[in-house]
Image (cartoon, each protein chain N blue to C red):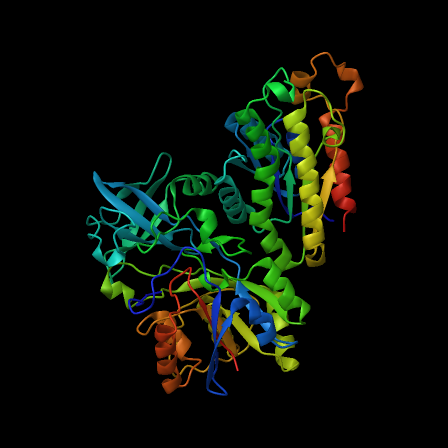
Length: 225
Length: 343
């Protein structure tokens, strides 16, 4: 896929992998709509992309909120036109330190599902109709090996990511004939704030830099039909 | 467009999925279901939909200390907006019973929420409720602010306010519509896939569907106001292909009829891709040049939708239709049942 001129939405774009993805896509010439709850941090990502000659727009929204999908889809449609690509990168780990399932509250479990599963479901649903009508579109789901490996303490997160991957598989069988493609990526263990909070003892030298992971996702998108 | 649906059964929140099929060639009416739409189409036919998303077009605020509601009626090519102003109250009061807005003059500033201000540019001669305004908020912040403070235009016949997601068609893209292009609401993706699988083409255009009601009779008769549209080259090609192969072009919604017929007229009979503004009014006696059939809602006499529907129906047939929707208990309004005129 030629990314120049494509309308791309990235959630969780204010830091970590999301910010790195936004910057890489900005360099590739995509027209970006970046989503985050953090107005200030998102603003600096947008500024950096614009300083490099790219196009980026900030939309402050919490993807876990039920009303966010229509708002994000509408604002994005107004700013850059119908979406060609959406990257569901926003993720919620839950309270730190990570707690075993037996000590996880309803509210914390539900919040992880709302951010990691329901948010991507609703935003995808708001966008795929237009993609299917146009016969093209790509939905990227950012997952984790916690989706398949049961790590103690990563319960709500792992369950939500496993469900997210299955969500992608079902979307794919339902919509691949319409020209909408679903890609699930596991960026691996990255040197991000989320990872530092979850695994403070990890040696940063052993972790992937978000910029490297972002380049791999951009390559994947370029190679996608 | 103006509604006059008093004689039609009250709407329900969930659609009933009924479809009334009128065949003007045979002079028949048939009660069926929207799920049967694929079988009513033939391979080679083309369905054209309006992919405009519905704006959060209703903004509440104050001007000179007095409450005002603005309903955005469309963005102009120069970046100003048309808007209709209402006085105190909200959607729970039918628009025709709402008090008039405070008197507004060019230069007046409307405060529509934190970070969202607009200035009156001018006022229409048709109605002092119809304004042209300019938002004093930069474009990017404007869209964020509109989606933060705006709500979709609501309907007094509903019991609770509709969230923005509920007033979108399944394939909504750019937010151009002041109210939902509701004819397409029943076209779920599964139904569209079955239509495609039958060898029927599906193409789209974007048309800025306007407001259905303004509360001012003088302005209501002037509806629909000129509306902008954009027709992609792929849709023009699909229409040409359908016509060459003897297929029928079926418009989903009166807005699609306006866009296609308006564009064909401004092109001297030829449909060309691109954007434009149409002030075309379609009624009895109008001869469509592009469109052969129409999927729409259920419309009562004296509504402008009904007027447009009449263009596709011989005179006596329109009366028969009206009787049938009443005796058959068909449901009108945005979330009601559907009419297919196709022969």
